[in-house]
Length: 194
Image (cartoon, rainbow, N blue to C red; front, side):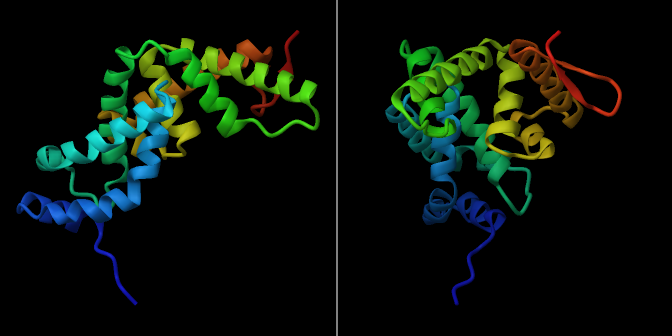
């Protein structure tokens, strides 16, 4: 049985000039980096380009690594920032995000009419997510979509955990208001819009 080196060991090797340590990191995180880049609004091609750029940039950024055994949140933070920068220069942003959400998050409908309605709802939801302020959206996507813990998202975004919680709360409030759900203070129950 082959025991894989922890991320911290691989990054230490990169700091010593061993670029072969990038290979295992690439294998572990490439697909997730592409996914994160896609959630910033990049189409698949641009997301894959950013992912390649992320791994080319890691040796240069390795001195900033926080030393945790897992580099997941650090790599995703680098990916989010680089993809956000790229997104600003891509004119196809909205169409790519609609395609990404429709492909990844909508269950297939039973017939074409139901599929059309489902796609329309997904596109509308994505549009609402896209309207969130950039900082709020980044916390929401990393936690709710990419399933990072709030601590990991805080590390990825280089912000306090409390700030992540605040941004998640704001995103949740705005999205609940959009779907017509008001939170009820007692017990966290929700009721349909009144």
